[in-house]
Length: 108
Image 1: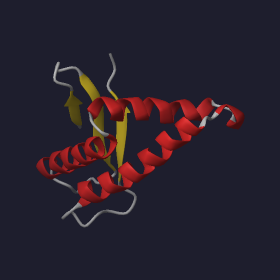
Image 2: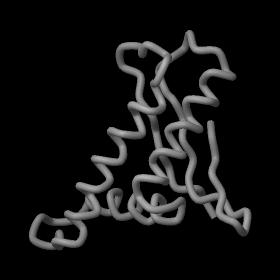
Image 3: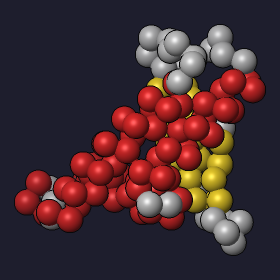
């Protein structure tokens, strides 16, 4: 698992490559780091990744009429960034059916 941190050394989010059992640990760590870097770059920084992730997670329980245009914009940016990050993360690995990257906000 790869954990990011802000300049104050407070972790913002973690990335884990899941369901790729044959991948050596050093390759997994590099893939997770590539994913995290690309995601942060696409969204404008590590704190913005954590903010977008919390926003996306809040959509699970939100009634459709309460989803604002701002939240929709964050969702679409997240989806675009996640696709780019997955492509970067899997670069050179060839992929494995069913593998995916899991991103979680770091617990306080």
